[in-house]
Image (cartoon, rainbow, N blue to C red; front, top):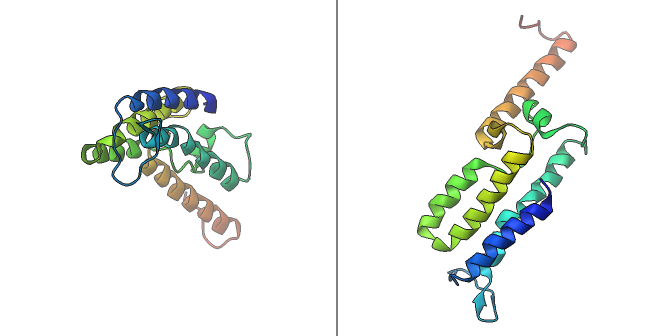
Length: 156
């Protein structure tokens, strides 16, 4: 998904959050009588989570020719900030810390736009499934290397 769309969606949510003028117990950024802390959190949770794509491309040796779906199936999708589990955690935290409701909405919008537009299976957005695929692909690669060197017999 294009970062501009994430930016626009996050700015819309962040702008609405200004009208609620929520107080954040840990820190505060005030400007023109408005508390911009939640505004900034909406930006972080809705746009800056895409920095994990840099890590993903780096760990995949900058191979941009492979699609996200291919990397997911091979257990090589390393988008550490993109996970449905984060929505569940943020929803739970927003019960105790109501100022997290708007960042939760911003993050959820980001995830919905990615799921709809990235052409990757919905399952690819679960950490537990990606982790399982990484372990499985590592075991297969290890087996193939050992078999290629004649250290083990084929499993078939």
